Image (cartoon, rainbow, N blue to C red; front, side, top):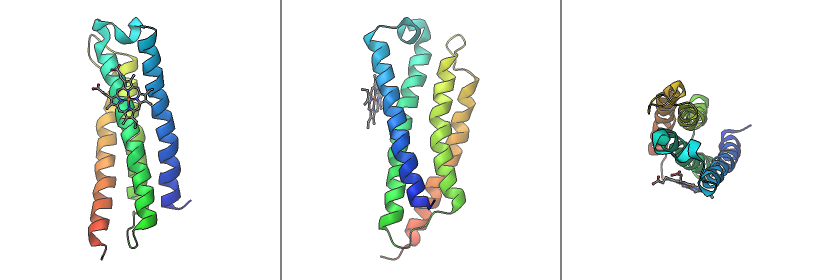
Amino acid sequence: MNPSDRHLRFGWWSLFTFLTLGVVLETLHGFKIGWYLDVDVEMRRLMFTLAHAHGTLLALVNIAAGLTLRLVKGFELSSGASRSLIWGSILLPAGFLLGGLIIHDGDPGLGVVLVPVGALLLLYGVGSAARSLSKVKS
Ligand code: HEM
């Protein structure tokens, strides 16, 4: 699959996934579920909200990457940069989600270690895109 198709396909499915998570959070509010809303588990709510917000916005970043690849002549993403962008967009929100599933005395669970890994992959992917775009002649 070419990189543009890959980012568009990933982006739209990821948007669907994280908007669904938004609907799940809304439902937890609607039914006043203590596992999510009680004051002593506020770290869980923070982690899930961060997963929803970051997952949604990173999905849009991938759609933007796919469209930029189609529309801007000369703009390229190496296979490594493209995969970093996608894996960063998976690992960062997954880390928030896992970190919130099991919490320890107000601290996020071990899964949160995926967050900095995802952040580094995203920095590499986005930095590569910015570098490639600044080389494009207008
Ligand atoms: C482009 C679409 C969306 C974006 C960028 C987005 C972004 C965000 C952000 C940044 C927050 C955190 C707000 C804060 O804590 O101050 C949030 C919270 C929330 N969002 Fe979304 N959202 C989107 C769509 C949706 C949809 C479709 C739903 C469900 C119908 C939804 C449900 C929620 C809920 C329930 C919260 C609050 C979670 C909580 O505090 O317990 N979101 N969203």
